[in-house]
Length: 370
View 1 (cartoon, one colour):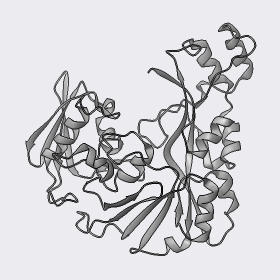
View 2: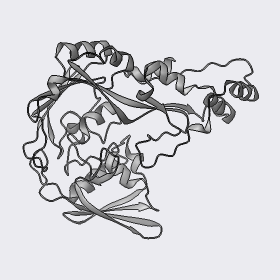
View 3: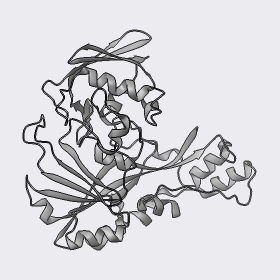
View 4: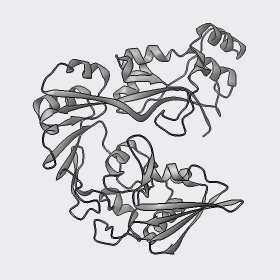
């Protein structure tokens, strides 16, 4: 499905944290309230953000990683080289030695090849395969060296290997169905249990390759889609952290000395996507009219309630991305121009359409309703 992206808002992550959790130091448990329950934990088979949030970096690690300042650094790889071969580009990665999977198997280049061969295999039917469609082959040079061959320059590869769904390495020969409910990786936490409808528990990987990590012994991810219920759980002490709190609830507890609101930019953008293969949005005038009709600042003021908790962005990339281009001024709010474009498109009075909103994320729902 082809889509034109018309309106973008970048959200600021609001975490409500119990101070008792912050004071626990390097041991103990952390209970996190998450909005959604995953539909599976095998990132080769699901595009769900809820799955990615639990699995990526915690259970399954990619070859590279983003730092807090959005620089790309080695993770399971220690270094890499890029060689231009004309119509192809070779990306050669040198892998970290001595890394173990949670099942005790050694991490090698064969696991990297297996992960991406499986991801790109049409029989896998991975919803994330298209992200790496420009990868022609993955070759094992030796047990600790692997080479990706891409069509052309393969420009997105480095960024995708640090963050894309499906980039976390799984053991060679893994059962895809088994990984849905019991993922195995090299990360700082191991999967422990999944109580459907209630929680997922991760426990410390005692054989993790990074000395001194992780700081926690256990992380319990509770599924609480209702924001009021998650806030009540935080106040009662049954959870230590609430992820992605809406601005209205964050304002309620800013002055509570027992709680702390942590805000900061995240790689979340809210997108109004129009299907340009179907009427009426197959008409470019309609798409432009919608762009001019949306008051982004008004939406942010109504949903985030503080200017620093959200900002308009001009593309579908977050400003945290090194690939972000600021196009905020391309479609300024101009209702008169929007009406004129609608008239040119054959809708001089009014038209109706339906906006589908992702459940159960309240911040997306609130934005869509406005």
